[in-house]
Length: 318
Image (cartoon, rainbow, N blue to C red):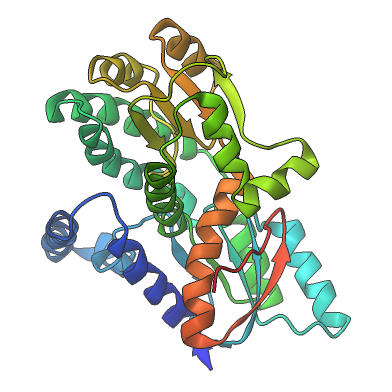
């Protein structure tokens, strides 16, 4: 048997291996957190989330009962109050689910979503944007997201899990790192020439093929099928999307095509202005890829069982 906490720690370790940043940068971030923690006093130190001292992904958290042994886990893209109630009902019917893992952050994980966005400085830099410009772009959006999530009812689903005594965690960027890394290697190996070729190779991925059942397969948000793919940037990890201002800098650095989970209307308009092709691979299906890559490692190491829930499609690559 394995505890939910051990699964979470394993997920963090594996995410670091495929992080767009190098290990030294992550170690530096954790070192600074430890130094700041030592300087805290009183209630601020008492209430500090000590998991942050060894986990660089503030949107990936144990939310309840991490020390519980688990074997069969319900995994979903969004697991909120209604989904926890469903799990409780399934347990009444004898399904015997031991824990719930959400992809999208809840509780403290959602309240701190803005913290993981700082890693996008490095992902922008890797596309050719200068570090100073990348930092300026990311800094403004981080503050915007921080203020945006501050008003949320973050204790809601965590209190539900506590009342129902369902061990509960969220694995957001730790999974998104996996899909980002996977797609970079996959597209580079396939080397599509035209946007139509890019769409075709994405549909060969089982999760994107499955999305076609819901008319949510890979879609061109900007550009034409006949356009050449050129230099590709990936928008799959780092919490949530940056501001539209990044697109001008990316175009100047030679980016021709962005493969994203999704993209807002304002950003699509800016991408058109900058002549950047945008392919929306699919949000929920991309999330499923990241989760599946991570779960394959968990199943192989800990022999856990997975129950699909809340938009998650289980595909094994073992």
